[in-house]
Length: 241
Image (cartoon, rainbow, N blue to C red):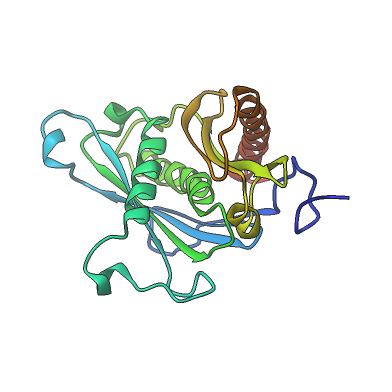
């Protein structure tokens, strides 16, 4: 009998669905669903770079992340109303930007910025990892748009990229935590990896008591399995299958 609330096996991802071209005006966009978590990711091209890159011939990728007011069980106040960016949102958007820049040759992008906007429509755990996995597809499509329009000669993306959560729930290592599991996890970890199996970022926390290296290794192996499956899904999406 599964220890998981939805009956999944410990190493099973939630159902994944990605719709490309979700937003009419963006150079790249997707709606990604992982279980009941839904995130709209858009990629917008701007023909300029931040001041620190001006004149270098190098491009930039940056991200913004937000949760819609009723994406959660209780209403979230918009950042625009509060007059400041939520600390959690700021941390996540920096993570998304770092992750995507790790798989792009920014010199081939030229002096332009790609803005990645990730808006959580519905949250049920794993919003940051879903955002990264979906944003990669939106970014890829934006880069292909630049190639088609002659702005750049070749797609500067160097590798695939995806992310997933893992953790210890009721003493069991599990993959792709939903909200109930995340809220009660003994260990909670987010892992970002490339298609070639290299780590981009690992965020891990002992929520109740410290964990040993053996547990860390098991969780990383579980994350690698999940990310391989997500990247296989991305490849099928981009190949139109």
